Image: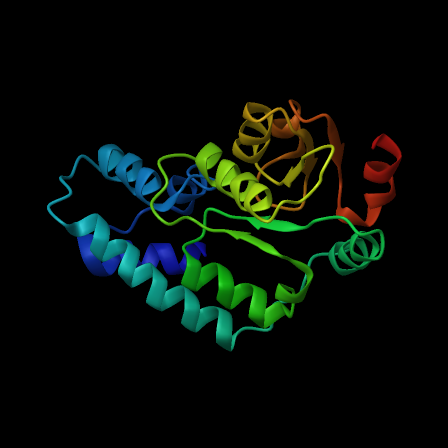
Length: 199
């Protein structure tokens, strides 16, 4: 993702931005992310945010398809466990649909989910989570508790906003210490049994 963003910014704006500038924004929906970066760069949009998003989409989908990515440790085992216990599973991501779905297809993970909530222009991460809940309600799922699992503080804050049980997993770029607001913090999903014990 980072390399695709950096290339998009250089191609569209001419700026070679540092990795940290885009990493700080991870977890936000696309447009708010770029609005903040453009503000930090001191440049006007003038249609260039849309161009950055389009360039990122091309770069990232191509990179995903040509890469050797694989699920993080514990992910598949955890998903298999949840499917076998008849839990309802949804994917919530700040990725735009083409990027998010290409990753799931590449990793063969789509089959585990019945809810897909991507960034389709939502103003905040909270709205992406609420969209997933609305999908569950429209499918008349009978659930007792909502659990939001993520690797950034933005994931945790979004889960808290809908009164979900939140799990921070320190396998992303964010340090484990930044996930302190979560109800449970794990080093990786290899420890998924701790989630089940809490619930």
